[in-house]
Image (cartoon, rainbow, N blue to C red):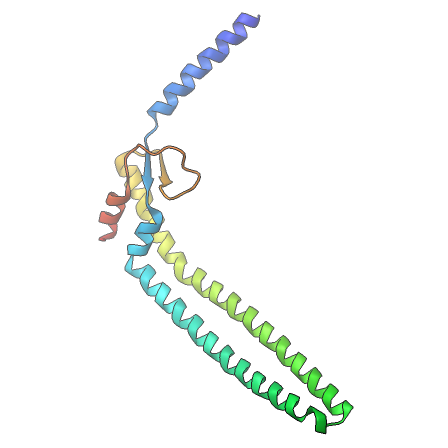
Length: 166
């Protein structure tokens, strides 16, 4: 019985090795292709413009808060304790608003990036699928992935770039 199970295990290993050799695997430089696509460059520029505008808005508000804080510090000796306490509460509220504004900016930037990148990623995946089917690839792995242990198979990057017109 033990010999039968060893024989079965050996047969399974031979079959699995044979099946693995039959599969065609290629690598693809996903980041390189995305960075070469004009749509991605345009989306990156749009996101950068959006973030820069929001950061400039936040900087103005921060500078105004800084000036107000400096004024309050300067006048603190001439104000009553109640006035100073109210001013301190006002500054704390302003600081909270700034934090909320920064969180909203990050969420908005992420949402904008997702919206802009979705059609770009879909286009790339459609082309990758087309190239894989045309060349008989069973798998295409990202060449830049840290999970890639061995890379010696064909590279699908040129075929995908050709299909994208890059």
